[in-house]
Amino acid sequence: MISEKQFASEFSGFWAETLPFLTPQAIAELNFNGATMGDGRREWMKPLAGSGDNSNNDVTAEIAFGLFAGSLKMRAPLAELSEDAAFIRGVEEGAKGRVLGLRRETVLRTHSPQPPTVEAIELAVRLESYFGIYPLESIVMQPRFKGCGILDSCYGDILAGKSLFELKMVDRNLRSADIRQVLVYCALNYRSSQFEIDSVTILNPRRGSEFSFDLEELAERISGKNAAELFHHITTFLADFETVHKPS
Image: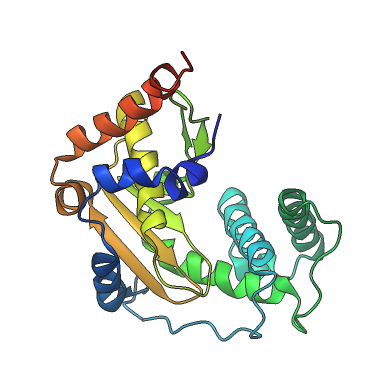
């Protein structure tokens, strides 16, 4: 079994055939025209001034997500929770454990003079501000999508209303693999009919940028197919992969 990130970043032949118009030129155009991340008051967010060292960005992102998720679950503002040392410590330890487990390391990289949690709180506050326009009951954190064929079940980041949000708290431009990843979630959802999703947004609170797409328009733009045709093509490949590639 593989993960959605593996599928989105590998299988280059399949993706080139499936998304012929998702070219480097198209990605460059999207990066040039990307919208500035805002909030319900239409106040725009500038790129977050960090320490200049990105080695612990994965830990920082995991903590930020945990802080935001915790604030929703406890129905408490982050301004209040950031004063709760036990809450912060619990989120921080859980995030470090998950990320360091993936890194197979036992210690944080120690180049940055600023603790990851300081930046994480700032990032979480940005998420709180951005998603403040959505009713709490319309937000699903880490929606689970059922697996298909060689692809294991996986979790998106945030579903709000009928929009799926993928968070990239990184100091880099949008990549084609980011778009392929959200398409994988939508294809799995198309097959299982778990959620109603009609748009996707790739959100980068670190850079203060967002890329929002209507699913039908995105599918037509990068594949020349409608969304149903595209998602059927993706899930059929996943479901039939082992049969087609089984050694004779």
